[in-house]
Image (cartoon, rainbow, N blue to C red; front, side, top):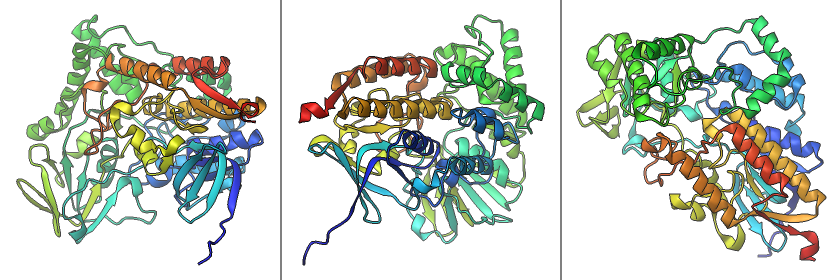
Amino acid sequence: MANQKTEVIILDAVVVGAGFSGMYMLYRLREAGFRTRVFEAADGVGGVWHKNRYPGAHCDNESVDYGFTFSEELYKEWNWSEKFSEQSEILDYLNYVADKFDLRRDIQLNTRINSAYYNEEQNRWTIQTDEGTTISAKYFISGVGCLSTANIPDFKGLDRFEGKWYHTGNWPKEEVNLKGKRVGVIGTGSTGVQLIPAIAPEVGHLTVFQRTPQYSVPARNHPYDPVYLNEVKESFEEYKQKRRYSFGGFPNDVEARPSALQDTPEEREKLYEAAWEKGAVSSFFLETYQDLVVNPEANETLSEFIRNKIRQTVKNPEVAEKLCPTYYYGTKRPIQDTNYYETYNRDNVSLVDVKANPIVEITPKGIRTTDGEYELDVIIFATGYDAMTGSLFKIDIRGKNGLSLKEKWENGEQTKTYLGIATSGFPNMFMITGPESPSVLSNVPTSIEQHVEWISDCIEYLRENDIEALEAKEQAEDEWSKHCREVAEATLFTKTDSWYTGANVPGKPRRFLIYLGGVGPYREKCSEVASKGYEGFSLESTLKKA
């Protein structure tokens, strides 16, 4: 049979994912004159905000901070309705961005990238989609995000369950009817803490299967005062600079005190009470004490404060103690909620400790733990994501000499990048908020903008200087990775099992892959690298190749 000739689409850049990262990357490259196309597996733009439509889904960053700042016009014409926006409003915003900047004409939906192979002879990437299309692009850019691959535990018997089951990360568009039903929720991370209070009033009975209790603080969400919104918009330039050069990517004006151990118990209590009443995770991290994530004794003062709040809120003392965490506060994803602990005072809500009584299997009628079977009509997995590397590994990415990214990084110790943007052996490939960048421990839109702007500036530099290929040097990668690890080891983050370290995915190597040196200092380091002709990268020119 004769070989069928396949047409190859020629582009300058392929971007994977149409969330915050992919849409802004498309905008920047297209403005610079590069032929760019975004490929998105879902049927709409928005990334995680397109798929995370579960009941109660809200952002835990303040709305005025959770958006783009590259366009002052966009920032001033969009009006957020409340302090912490719900999923639908953020999705509306991202659709508005797509329309305002005419991005949809270069976004291909319902298309998954299966593979991306680097051709060393041509210095180009050959990319295959799930529909059989072949693309040749000079640059391959990942905008897949850190939290977009759902983690569904491999429970025995799930295929035999006679009811319905859902994962919060792939929630159906159509309404899910839970009214009067026996519902089981597995997982009490950020998603579970939002979901549980939202569905408890509707269901017949809610059984929460908790492995690890979580610290959560009140969100104190409320509608925005139009006067406040106008004040923020009028100070746009000052606000933008504060956000970009701050430690966490937030324009915070309150300076935390040096140490929780320098104040009296009464002074600490007063400060923690003020943060509790103000609400939001950021109040505890940015407006109390600087040593909470580096000093175990300091951390314990806040941890016990929150545990006491749980005991005061939950009426059943036995349930309250089951809900009290023991790990260092903040070393798992910090959570904020609306009436989470209060929900356990409802007669139709029960808590099952699956650390003491593990789940054995999913039965046709429900969930069986070591202490018995719980009959359910619906099971909801709020079990999070295969974070940081999971979405990259879903694509067969191969660099020089056919080396796959998954093979290079399969041992956690070998998961190394340069600046969290590039990795050696994979020329002309860029990662937006990749491993070893501030990513999820920063205000992510701030970090996305910084990465997108750095990458687009870099690609323009390569064009202007006739550079065919740019690749991170192994030495630069080793030094950056070592620096990231040293910064992390100086904190309490590495002392706790969490999805930050991959502990939520069985068999995944444990490694803390987030840069903790601060958004502002990180930005300055990236700018310094660029100002020195992309120091730490090898550059192959067109003339050299000729």
